[in-house]
Image (cartoon, rainbow, N blue to C red; front, side, top):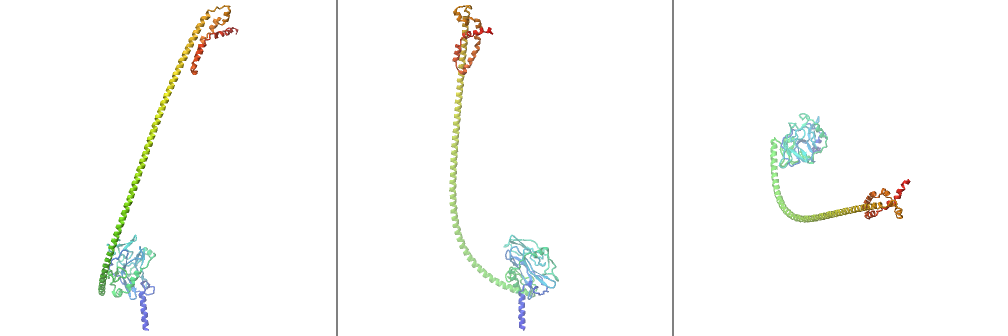
Length: 475
């Protein structure tokens, strides 16, 4: 019976140790004892860029409160920040509120965990373009290896080491509007490395508050679960018994570290030699390959340059020949056009000169012919006038010698001349103005008409017309 009770108690203790702290309140366990004050410690060096600080805290197990060392943890995704968990008084007991990853830092009870977590928000750094920027004022960062750093003073809203909110002696902070908003955002729970870190702490008796009295020998680590590594840091002001433990642990760690370092040094030496030999062989091969490639490249470049130069010269020669041919063609065309224009002008000048010559000759011939005709007409007119004048003069004396009363038959046949008085009235001489009609002779160019006029010496015609004069009294 007693054995069964011990077995049952043992199973119960194991079950309690395996239960996360957040689940204690859900199982109905009533924790009325407040957690101890926060541990004071120095932050270990950040192991590499991208890790964020998660502060240490008191968790509750089967043997009471135990310290979970603060550590550098890798977030589950780029851009996420850690909101620490905290203890809160629920009216009749203390309950643990789990921490979480999110885009912004939410409410963590106003607890001053330090290193950027001063009670409200986080001043340890921020994400920018996929890289986390560290505030060296509150973070222990090697700026030689990590270059995304800046410096800014962080003001802590809480200046004590109280580790819980509410209840007697607890922090009275309440969530701000921004923290209320962050509480409703999408959250990611602690990573597997963080959960394993807490479970390892629960199994280490040196971390029990009942053993270390609030001064744990391992207050922080450089990475989760590395309690014995070089990056482990003890709490400040640890008790004497803890110092002995720390000295022992330090000696153990020192020996282990030395052995590990020697082994690592030997391994590194061998690896370095092998790597150097391999690198030398690789470099030799790479150099040969590079030289061969460079030689081939230069050969190809030279061939390409020669081909390009030959093509360029060929194109230039063709262009020069084409240009010279075009120039000669243009010059020949210009010479032909100029010669044609010269011949055309000379022909036109010769034609104009010949035309002018012909015109002048024609005008001269016409003027000479006109002058000749005019002179001939004038000569004909003068000859005709002289002939008429002579005929008239010859006619007048002949009429005067004819007897007026002659009864001879001969006189009877010459009756027309027997009337000189009538003939005097019908003198044809005054009608000489008809001679100007001979001026029309140039139009018909019939100079012989002048001869006709000369033959028109018909003085007898007025004699024939004389009877008409005699008939006038009949009127």
